[in-house]
Amino acid sequence: MIARWQRGMAGAGLAMAVAFAGAGCAEVGNTASDIASRAVASATAAVDRKLDDIKNGVDSKDEVTLGTPGKDSDGRTTVKVTAANTADSAKSFAVQVDFRDSGGNLLDTTLVTVSDVPAKGSKDGTARSNRKLSGNEVKTEVGRALRY
Image (spheres, rainbow, N blue to C red):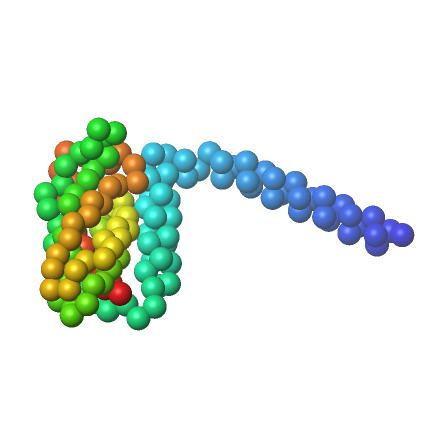
């Protein structure tokens, strides 16, 4: 009977320790920078999963070009994505577009699908950041691109 009570108290003590530790963590890691870092990590993981799910994709980073970044009416950064299909049949492209600040730090990433690009032709799409990006000079680059 005492052993059961001791286990119960040990469990209650552990629960209290976890609760206090969790309460302490609520104050740590909630700066704007921390939140932005978590958002970028989440977006990157989502893009990686989607690209990894594409079957028989061919690396086509050299077949994709990006225009000059701008802002849409919501204040999010956008950029034109042009996919040039060198294959003999229509193909689709999945393009990871990375948004970076002037120091090269990753601000955001997104995945754009440019569907049904004609054989030996090209087609445009638009990449849009997942959120408003701070800073005046946002640069874009192709992270990965798959033709399928």
